Length: 225
View 1 (cartoon, rainbow, N blue to C red):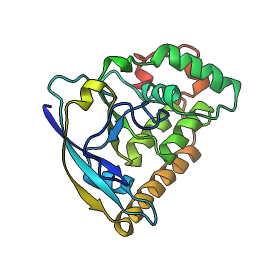
View 2 (view 1 turned 60 degrees about the vertical axis):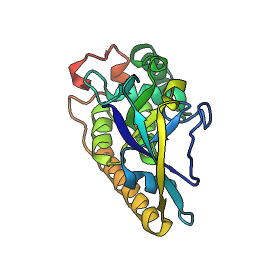
View 3 (view 1 turned 180 degrees about the horizontal axis):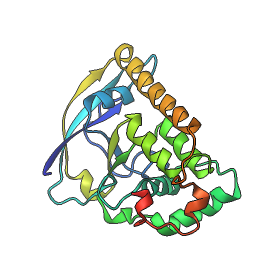
View 4 (view 1 turned 120 degrees about the vertical axis):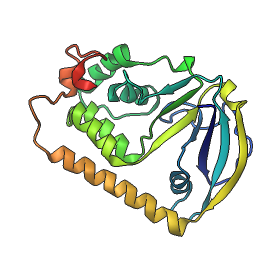
């Protein structure tokens, strides 16, 4: 992976992404959030009555360190823990609060050691999945399945100052709201229906809920791989 073509959906044309800009409470913290999918970037760029732009870049990965959450050894619990460290959750129970401490102690990743992070994007539907898991209402297996089947896409995030020196602007495509907002809404609606379907299903003896995990489940446990 030397040169990676990535897209950033925005209301603006962004020729020079700036390190340190943006919202700190995004999924993986402060960074420049992109995707390898042009269509997803266009969907993320628009709102119901607002067009946008899919900015295109080449990212030179030759000497950048990539944290890919789909690599072997990482689990959905690593993803959840990253969200806990960066997003704001409503933790409704003592189990959720203890669970946050347990996950942080056992599944936190050294993100400062990496230049780029790749993983699921926690839009409204995926964030709802994560919150339900933390409030002990769905199992880690159902959460993992919902993320795989939701088809909401992965994001690539530039997080280090070094990464921002390795990105080159290649141009942009217009994103038409009349075309791409319905596609975005349809994708999100399907993901939400998948979540509700999973949530209504009967639990199996192998399902692990947060109250099971805090009893000692570690990252190498085969039940969460």
